[in-house]
Image 1: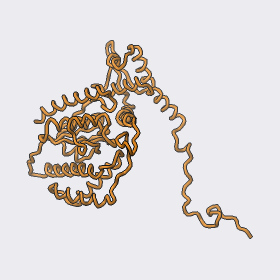
Image 2: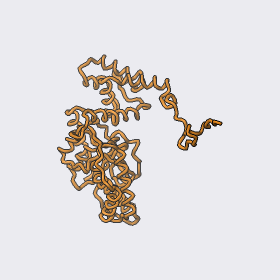
Image 3: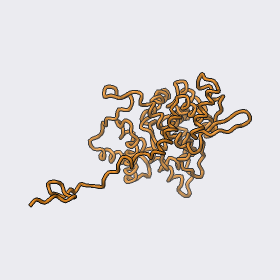
Image 4: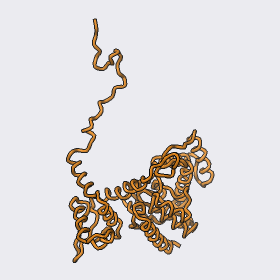
Amino acid sequence: MTVAPSPDQSPGGSADQTAGPAPVPADGRALGPDVAVSVAGVLKALADPLRLRMLSAIATAPGGEAHVGDLAALAEVSQPTVSHHLKVLRDVGVLSADRRGTSVFYRVAPVYRTAVTTLLDRFAPAVADSGRVATPEDPGAGRWTELHGLADVDRELGRLAESLAARIPGTSEDEALRVVRESYTALARRGGIPVHLVALTEHFARQRLADAAKNRTVEAPGTDPDHPPQVLFVCVGNAGRSQLAAALLARSAGDRVVVRSAGSVPAGDVHDVVRPVLEDLGAPDDVFFPKPLTDDAVRAADVVVTMGCGDSVPVLPGKRYEDWVVGDPALASPAGVRAIRDELDARVHRLIDTLL
């Protein structure tokens, strides 16, 4: 007599031990139809080069607002044409407007601020940096990510931790190993080219351990430590503005000021248009690379300068906070990059005057 296999058995008669929950169908994973229509409407409104330039100019303007006269300089078009494009962005809710006398000022609507920041600080630079396709013959183009890894990463990280524990007073080997491993993982998660990942880990972990050691000294009761002022520059990707500001401060102040930079959502690498400027400033590759923001870096800083990511930075007592509204060099023309560099340089010199 032939017995049919039960539903939980394979045709060969053995139970299928690997069967799991049924996969969720595509219509259960995709955007809902109504949401898709709404999102598509906003994306259609944004899908115009001039509107994107206007949006970036408004988002980075002093006070976060601009009027038609300011924006007309972006292109050789009439003010009515500028007003039309601004109306399109208003109609989908991305911009809000406020009339003062005879002028109308535009700003990013509060509900869209985070989304616009993500668009300008993450998505747009990624598109700008992907203009060339990397190959093994030209690994400098774009982002070639073939891993030139180590045969035994754990062994290298262990040696690195031992070395850092010996070099940084008050640091135990256990603390050093924990910070080294965390730093390696955090830098690996950024993406980008991992060729020198262990070397970058050494620099990042050394900064973190030095900040932790400073914090222990400063917070110890009965101590009156004498440290040079420490400045932390923070932007979203730590791939443009904060890197330039840190390089400019390091060049002008030297070892009179301790300089740090970080990103609330660090990018895989410094933006292509920024790297030549950093090289002109004499910035070494093993110092100016995107790094994640840490609590110890904020605690160790005397001055924290944010650039479009203030909501991501902890507010601690006794710290001086500044917010610099500066355009993103990743989205600028060569002349625009130079103008941003010059603006940051002027701000850095004013900062030095208050520190030294």
